[in-house]
Amino acid sequence: MKAREAAELLGVDSVQISQIESAVAGVSAERVRRLVAHYACTDEALIDALVSMATDRTRGWWEEYRDQLPAPFMDLPEMEHHARFRRDVEFLHVPGLLQTADYARFLYSYVNPEFPPSDVERRVEHRMKRRVIIERPDPVPYDAVIHEAALRIRVDDRTTARAQLARVLEISEADHVTVRVIPFDLDGFGGAGSAMVYAGGPVPKLDTVVRDGPGGPVYIDTEAQLNRYRTRFRRVEAVSLDPDRSRDFIHRLAKEL
Image (cartoon, rainbow, N blue to C red):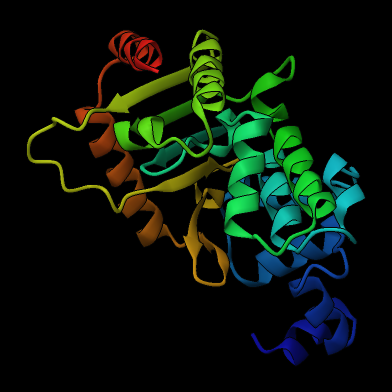
């Protein structure tokens, strides 16, 4: 539908439709249901999930950063707030949810050398707060597949590297967390381009994949693309070490430092 047609259906003007689409304005449950009825959507689980998300007026912790950090810093934690599970695949850096403050601080300082210390600290603080989804009393199930390269690359010094590996080992002991390692000596592995953040939505159709792009995070949510990334995750998971062997592997790396 054109914005004008949707506006007529809801009894508003096209400007308000544009504001709803760009997340500047909210939308009521009644209007969501009117739209999905017009689109002949009969997936009740999807409809209920959309209504719940549209009417959730919770002011998340990330709102305090709205005027301090770019928009992607707001989008990521809000997506995570609604997620039912989280899967990460990383090849060059330890996944953000597993990073220590020192590790994250050096990454931000290195990638953005022009940032003053206050901007770096704000980003580090924000990243540490995002860990709430796996540290709160009702954490989401979390699966991380990490290549040996990410564990070996020393982003700072030995002390930071040891503390980072210790952090990965510590969180991997939690019942809701599974950490797997892909070793260098794996034969026939061509999946180094499969890095991703996969957030499971309230229903599968609302799943989202996040990948790094030249202009910042790229959000992927079409069914065909999601199926592709679901397959990619299963493949990298299948070739990685099991959780116990992965912990032993990380222990050995830590002893080498």
